[in-house]
Amino acid sequence: MRMTVIGTGYVGTVHAACMAAMGHEVLGIDVDADRIASLAAGRAPIREAGLDELLARTVKSGRLRFSTSLAEGAAFARTHFVCVGTPQRPDGEAADLRCVDAVTDELARHLRPGSLVVGKSTVPVGTAARLGRRIAAVVPDAEVAWNPEFLREGSAVQDSMRPERIVVGVTSAHAESVLRTLYTPLLRAGAVFFSTDTATAELVKVAANSFLATKISFINAMAEVCDAAGADVTVLAAAVGADSRIGELFLEPGLGFGGSCFPKDIRAFAARAEEIGAGEAVAFLHEVDRINTRQRERTVSRARRLVGGSFADRRVAVLGASFKPGSDDVRDSPSLAVAASVAREGATVRVHDPQALDNARAALPDPTYTLDIPKACEQADLVLHLTPWPEYQQIDPRALVPVVRHPVLLDARNSLDARPWRAAGWSLHALGDPT
Ligand code: NAD
Ligand code: UGA
Image (cartoon, rainbow, N blue to C red; front, side):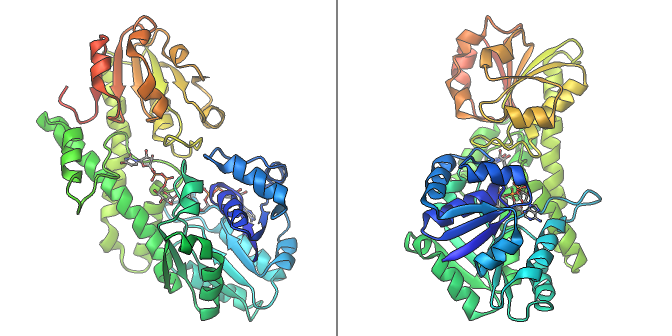
């Protein structure tokens, strides 16, 4: 089947390549001409495991092409996936829908009758219905459906090729049948298919992200209590998570969540719920957000104590810049937020990251960046472990002792094995541990 994928960022590039890999003919469209040129040459704009190979293969096969023209897209296909960004509005907490609206209006000018516009972007409930009315005013026979995306950065290709569930919000049996057919290989591979109305589909997405964010903030709230009580949150998380009704995933305590989605999605959900008269029902999300932001402050203040009360004239090594391992994305990265605070308070900061240095440098120019862990740690008074890349588990703590000024490490992700570090003479600290 033929389709366009509009917006070739994290979601769109992966979706376009995966749909082409499933045998569909795909035209990826973006307003960013440089991005389109490099995609057309088979180069991904982002680093994701398996994406470069998939792109190269599908572009070479001719099943995946790229363009900057929505008019070309409307002529090429009758199914259009919208994957443009929905960031937080600059003037508040609601979602900024300007890109989604711009695509809809431009598409409506060119759409052929009977076309299906399928939103994948994360949007406030009611958006599909609103856009549907907007398109229907121009193209009577067109439909807007919503098919939220659940991929995680770092495992985006795997998540897209083997999703646990596919959710579609539709207003006709025709749209459901088109989407079911498009996703047949994924359904055969075991994905559960939920077909519902558009409002429910939109809400499934923000409810899922809110639940996951709440789980993380819950365990971080427990870490604060553990700090006060002299208890160990790592053991607490493992023991609480061993109850299969709770589950161990997303109970990793530490610096908290960042990225382009959880923070802005819980805020946008709370703002939209307020608009439709259900604000009280999700007022707890404000607390989830506050707990999360507080972990960044707790990390900075713990670090400050560990360097003697002030960062002036101190050297701090930061391990990790991306918002999570496996991704080069630094949007709302907790690690960079901590690095920025520490630098603002007078420390000389050196940051290591295996993949995100270019993006980190663009987002936060002040620190020194390096691909070499010992270089990042040279003469450091304190090492901060902020993004739990697997590389950091492989560090030989003995080899770093002569490199640093003081062998003091704050493991703000509670994920390093303390024993070899302590055996090598390091003073090791974590959030929510009894030390
Ligand atoms: P992104 O910022 O990486 O990419 C968005 C792309 O849309 C950019 O390439 C931009 O140039 C393009 N664009 C903007 N306006 C356009 C227009 N008028 N016409 C064509 N292209 C246009 O965003 P993303 O991270 O891929 O997220 C996209 C959506 O998916 C968001 O709503 C996000 O919340 C949601 N989402 C993201 C993830 C994720 O892991 N990043 C996962 C699930 C859902
Ligand atoms: C998240 C969801 O997991 C995806 O299902 C969703 O599609 C996506 O948001 C989205 O809507 O964009 P992602 O942000 O890529 O995916 O990454 P996660 O693995 O969920 O991690 C998010 C943040 O939470 C990271 O900063 C991570 O370090 C943090 N985290 C995660 C914790 O602090 N503790 C945990 O136990 C788990």
